[in-house]
Length: 144
Length: 142
Image (cartoon, rainbow over all chains, first blue to last red):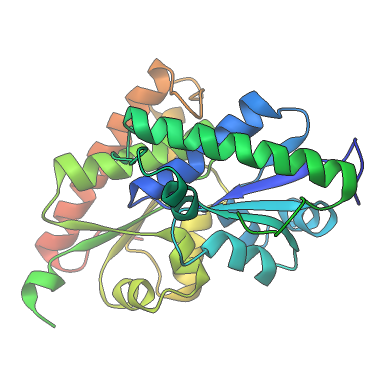
């Protein structure tokens, strides 16, 4: 299931009502488009939950990283509910607590601090992705 | 139920991250919520809705909803019907773009011009649907 050729599935929460949901989405784009384009694949949460076969098979056969905007952890919960196993989960709020200077604002368009927070989060998850591909699990806890 | 609460339409957007049409759906929804019909609409968070958010599901059971989907998978429409009630109206971004003769939107992070035009078209259509739904209490054909 893991190895240098392993594709890691990345699922952000898709929240639309708060800046933290936007940070989750932006960080997923940073990760999948810029930082680890060949090692990751973005999967839309709704596709998975509504039973789309390809999405379901992917989360059941690949390691999964979830990025949630709020403490309800919808992405993480729904991946598990859909038969996948979350290898690494991140909550934007937890990362923000470690970077209080980066307060995200704006839903449609993030402010500069929100953009930076998304990048910081993506860089942290990129390290976890590398570890997952190398050894099957990120070092330390599975929760950022 | 207070009438002030009753006179709202719930908008459920697919927000599909994988394709540009998902970005169109999300931005059009925000345009309606924040600019075009701010006092007549609320958004329903699709992931929370799917994860079992009781308040969101209850709202969608008793209020008209408009779903906006990026593609023919129609995740928002199917999810709304599965967990609450049939949406009063459904929009598929790809259909709106095709009907307007616009090319397929591109740029899931930053929409191209065609994508931005489709955002406006979808938002305007949603706003008209909101007015119809709140005017006659029945809404357009589903």
